[in-house]
Image 1 (cartoon, rainbow, N blue to C red):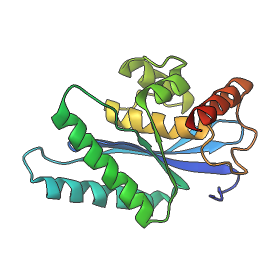
Image 2: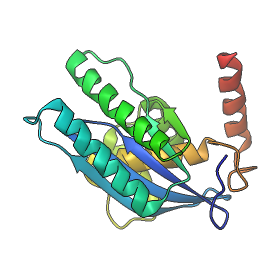
Image 3: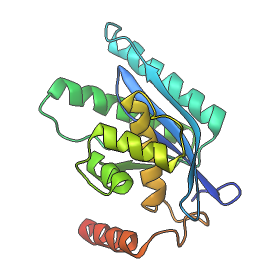
Image 4: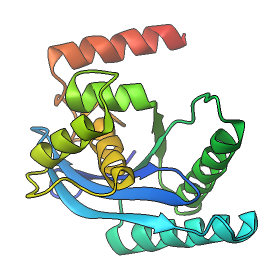
Length: 191
């Protein structure tokens, strides 16, 4: 269980990818207001050997954790795609993100793209532009976060905090009745 600072939960969201891995850190309060702490993209060359690409990704995530000290790490859950090569790279990047979180003793959570879109826009099939627009509004940003990987990382972080994450003083009672019903339904399907 995490202990949020000043009633805020700090979440590191990660949109895993080998070439571009989005990272976003947000603070979310009990009333669900969110503020930007950090956003960026960790990049590696597609021409580099896989072990070097994964090492670059791990080092970048370690830097973000050391600099911003999140309470929890939320990672986009790998889902089946038509392109096996793409899904393998995403799965490898996701594994590195979860490993680095574990090395730092941080709890983790995963969320599907449709969960994230539904939490942020109210529509599970929202497009990238809709997610970017809503994240800019939620975080009160003057411009849309770029590239889309960075916006997705922020969306994953906000989604996690809003969907309940671990029950902490910062998130207890923060769910709306509809969110509580959704969380109850999800728990029931896991039994």
